[in-house]
Image (tube, rainbow, N blue to C red; front, side, top):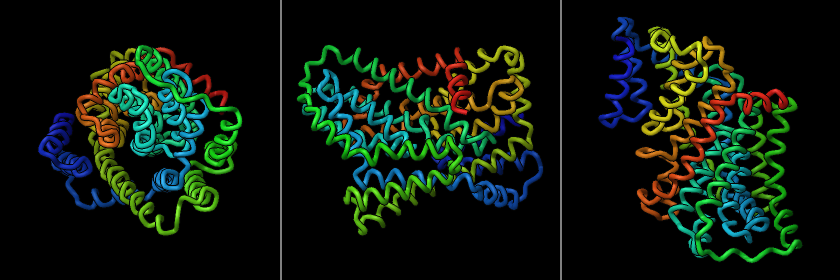
Length: 425
């Protein structure tokens, strides 16, 4: 009955158009009334304590770093570097999109921001070259969701806080799966675009490639600094976010000189707006998380799926299917914040590595960003590329299937995540 109250309150509030954060608060209050322990202080205390976490400081700084990268010219130079290397290959602009997505993913960790930056620069180029624009937009969106998987990742920070899992280990474990997603996209793009009659860009001479590499050098060093510093213990993920923001500001203002003092107010304001949305979601979700634990909902769900606990792969397949369905209706952060407190006790009881589960769970929620009807990244790329959403949905299908295929591969072969993690540890 407790599960029914939880689902009815959450889904009912969302069905009538209540924003997700307030729906989560309403769900917590509904559980309190059902349990006979209503106290407004519980809501206030859990929201304050939930947001008052040092680790969560990484979110505003990584979001700020992403805004500074776009405003300061780092994103543009990364794309120019990729174009100089592979733009002349048939279908090369699609490969450029994936390479640039991987590099930018290692800098900001925001799927929507990376997708917008990629699409705004590459879609006009691909349109002029004669590419199928809806398919190209689908590729951009699919490349954008690599950002929350390759570190530094805002999604891993949220999951680590909600599920009490090491964020540093999540960062290290996400590198290989993120690269696998990129390889799958390149292979799929080369297959589906092989018959397109497009005009490749002229081959760049080695001197121009060297100049493009030099211009992008400051941007390309950034992920080495961030990931190297975390890996060798020079700073925590939260401190790495500060380093990323300061570095992006320094390079944009004093090296590339595209970021002016008068731009800073708008950049900081946009980062603050996005941060407020994410952190309010986190605070509201932790009210529900506390009550989910108090109401013993994980134990009830565990009792339902207990027959699967002895078969970890079957259990993971069922959970991934559940998350995939939920992800079609919810954004990334709410999905993580709602499901992780419910699922983690079951995962630990089944003996599944929490870091490994965190990687495939976050990857699954990322796939939800490119699945209708919500599909935040779908809407971003549709708006930036000026392509109707329905056409983008058709264009993204082969890439969506490729990402689901990578997810299935990781579920069936956990060592693809665990072995590189042991090396990186």
